[in-house]
Length: 147
Image (tube, rainbow, N blue to C red; front, side, top):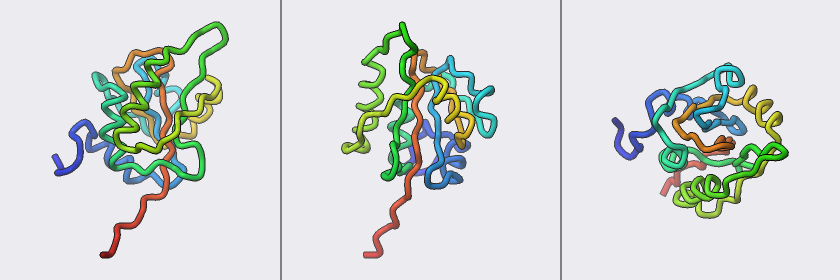
Protein backbone atom coordinates (compact mmCIF):
# COMPACT_ATOMS: atom_id res chain seq x y z
CA UNK A 1 0.00 0.00 0.00
CA UNK A 2 1.02 3.56 -0.60
CA UNK A 3 0.29 6.50 1.62
CA UNK A 4 -2.39 8.86 0.31
CA UNK A 5 -3.72 6.43 -2.32
CA UNK A 6 -7.08 4.82 -1.72
CA UNK A 7 -6.57 1.04 -1.49
CA UNK A 8 -9.43 0.57 -3.97
CA UNK A 9 -6.94 1.68 -6.65
CA UNK A 10 -5.01 -1.49 -7.44
CA UNK A 11 -1.32 -1.42 -8.38
CA UNK A 12 -2.31 -2.38 -11.94
CA UNK A 13 -4.82 0.47 -12.20
CA UNK A 14 -2.32 2.92 -10.70
CA UNK A 15 0.26 1.88 -13.32
CA UNK A 16 -2.24 2.25 -16.16
CA UNK A 17 -3.33 5.70 -14.99
CA UNK A 18 0.31 6.79 -14.77
CA UNK A 19 0.93 5.58 -18.33
CA UNK A 20 -2.07 7.45 -19.74
CA UNK A 21 -1.54 10.75 -21.52
CA UNK A 22 -3.71 13.78 -22.13
CA UNK A 23 -6.85 12.77 -24.00
CA UNK A 24 -6.57 9.08 -23.21
CA UNK A 25 -9.76 7.50 -21.92
CA UNK A 26 -10.43 5.16 -19.03
CA UNK A 27 -13.71 3.25 -18.92
CA UNK A 28 -15.26 2.23 -15.64
CA UNK A 29 -17.66 -0.42 -16.87
CA UNK A 30 -20.57 -2.18 -15.29
CA UNK A 31 -20.49 -5.94 -14.85
CA UNK A 32 -22.44 -6.47 -18.07
CA UNK A 33 -20.07 -4.55 -20.36
CA UNK A 34 -18.29 -6.67 -23.01
CA UNK A 35 -14.86 -5.35 -22.05
CA UNK A 36 -12.85 -8.20 -23.57
CA UNK A 37 -14.60 -7.56 -26.89
CA UNK A 38 -14.41 -3.77 -26.99
CA UNK A 39 -11.31 -2.92 -24.94
CA UNK A 40 -8.54 -4.96 -26.51
CA UNK A 41 -5.61 -3.05 -24.94
CA UNK A 42 -6.00 -3.18 -21.17
CA UNK A 43 -8.87 -4.86 -19.34
CA UNK A 44 -8.72 -4.94 -15.56
CA UNK A 45 -11.12 -6.84 -13.36
CA UNK A 46 -12.66 -4.97 -10.47
CA UNK A 47 -15.26 -7.56 -9.54
CA UNK A 48 -17.00 -6.58 -6.33
CA UNK A 49 -16.03 -2.92 -6.70
CA UNK A 50 -18.66 -0.26 -7.28
CA UNK A 51 -18.08 2.58 -9.71
CA UNK A 52 -18.83 5.43 -7.24
CA UNK A 53 -16.16 4.03 -4.88
CA UNK A 54 -13.66 3.80 -7.75
CA UNK A 55 -14.44 7.37 -8.78
CA UNK A 56 -13.67 8.58 -5.25
CA UNK A 57 -10.38 6.65 -5.31
CA UNK A 58 -9.31 7.58 -8.83
CA UNK A 59 -10.18 11.26 -9.13
CA UNK A 60 -7.74 12.60 -6.52
CA UNK A 61 -5.02 11.10 -8.77
CA UNK A 62 -6.50 11.72 -12.21
CA UNK A 63 -6.94 15.15 -13.81
CA UNK A 64 -10.09 15.36 -15.91
CA UNK A 65 -9.73 16.92 -19.36
CA UNK A 66 -10.58 20.61 -19.48
CA UNK A 67 -10.56 20.86 -23.31
CA UNK A 68 -13.14 18.21 -24.18
CA UNK A 69 -16.03 16.48 -22.45
CA UNK A 70 -14.25 14.65 -19.61
CA UNK A 71 -17.18 12.43 -18.56
CA UNK A 72 -19.28 10.38 -20.95
CA UNK A 73 -22.01 7.84 -20.35
CA UNK A 74 -24.11 5.65 -22.60
CA UNK A 75 -27.52 6.98 -23.61
CA UNK A 76 -30.53 4.71 -23.30
CA UNK A 77 -31.51 2.69 -26.31
CA UNK A 78 -34.87 3.69 -27.77
CA UNK A 79 -37.62 2.14 -25.64
CA UNK A 80 -35.39 1.91 -22.54
CA UNK A 81 -35.27 4.34 -19.67
CA UNK A 82 -32.30 5.52 -17.64
CA UNK A 83 -32.30 5.20 -13.87
CA UNK A 84 -31.46 8.78 -12.80
CA UNK A 85 -30.04 7.47 -9.51
CA UNK A 86 -27.08 5.91 -11.33
CA UNK A 87 -25.84 9.27 -12.66
CA UNK A 88 -26.71 10.96 -9.36
CA UNK A 89 -24.56 8.46 -7.44
CA UNK A 90 -21.67 8.87 -9.89
CA UNK A 91 -21.84 12.66 -9.81
CA UNK A 92 -21.98 12.70 -5.99
CA UNK A 93 -18.70 10.75 -6.03
CA UNK A 94 -17.21 13.00 -8.72
CA UNK A 95 -18.27 16.20 -6.96
CA UNK A 96 -16.73 15.00 -3.69
CA UNK A 97 -13.36 15.37 -5.45
CA UNK A 98 -14.05 17.72 -8.41
CA UNK A 99 -16.87 20.04 -7.27
CA UNK A 100 -16.96 21.99 -10.56
CA UNK A 101 -17.34 18.91 -12.81
CA UNK A 102 -20.14 19.11 -15.35
CA UNK A 103 -22.59 16.23 -15.75
CA UNK A 104 -21.59 13.49 -18.17
CA UNK A 105 -22.43 13.80 -21.83
CA UNK A 106 -24.62 10.93 -23.02
CA UNK A 107 -23.63 9.20 -26.25
CA UNK A 108 -25.26 6.47 -28.33
CA UNK A 109 -24.50 2.87 -27.40
CA UNK A 110 -22.56 2.18 -30.59
CA UNK A 111 -20.62 5.44 -30.28
CA UNK A 112 -19.74 4.31 -26.76
CA UNK A 113 -18.48 0.97 -28.12
CA UNK A 114 -16.41 2.82 -30.73
CA UNK A 115 -14.83 4.88 -27.93
CA UNK A 116 -14.19 1.70 -25.95
CA UNK A 117 -12.22 0.21 -28.84
CA UNK A 118 -9.88 3.23 -28.68
CA UNK A 119 -9.82 3.55 -24.88
CA UNK A 120 -6.54 3.19 -23.06
CA UNK A 121 -8.08 0.82 -20.51
CA UNK A 122 -11.30 -0.59 -19.16
CA UNK A 123 -12.07 -1.64 -15.60
CA UNK A 124 -14.91 -4.16 -15.38
CA UNK A 125 -16.56 -3.58 -12.01
CA UNK A 126 -19.20 -5.27 -9.93
CA UNK A 127 -21.72 -2.49 -10.62
CA UNK A 128 -24.88 -4.06 -12.02
CA UNK A 129 -26.77 -0.86 -12.88
CA UNK A 130 -28.12 -0.76 -16.42
CA UNK A 131 -26.26 1.89 -18.47
CA UNK A 132 -23.74 2.09 -15.65
CA UNK A 133 -20.64 2.64 -17.80
CA UNK A 134 -18.68 5.89 -17.62
CA UNK A 135 -15.70 7.17 -19.58
CA UNK A 136 -13.12 9.41 -17.92
CA UNK A 137 -10.99 11.49 -20.30
CA UNK A 138 -7.60 12.34 -18.82
CA UNK A 139 -6.45 15.94 -18.78
CA UNK A 140 -3.12 17.61 -18.27
CA UNK A 141 -1.84 17.10 -14.74
CA UNK A 142 -0.93 20.48 -13.26
CA UNK A 143 2.65 21.04 -12.20
CA UNK A 144 3.31 21.17 -8.49
CA UNK A 145 3.87 24.65 -7.15
CA UNK A 146 7.56 25.49 -6.63
CA UNK A 147 6.85 27.60 -3.55
